[in-house]
Length: 169
Image (cartoon, rainbow, N blue to C red):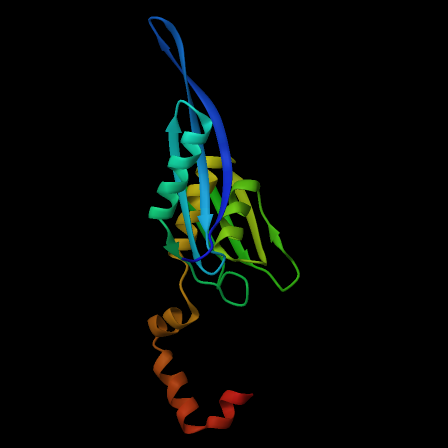
């Protein structure tokens, strides 16, 4: 089985008032990825921290998605809105690293990105930031998909078939 990396991004305690007093629970948010284009986000609740983290990890593994990586970065700019959070993700040149907040960085690192620029606008709530990041990665399209949508994919392939030396340039 492939090696997965796990990041426990957020663990927090919640309280519920009952007739006998407060009842505490733990919320855990975990990111799981293989570093080669697959990443998942999971949320778990339990009375003890290890149980919550275990549940979150299991759910993150179930909900893994494939992402597009082009030269260690994202293929194009994208702006995503999730509730009160807006997230901008941009490709970066080699050597830049991942410029992002902790929750966004965890997802991008787990997915296998090495050079990405991000900016959170509006709410910086970590949970919304994680959901916005996952939404942005799902909406990313490969360069081939974009060319096909523009009707240029066929032209490009025909040019390569007719002039093989163009491809090597």
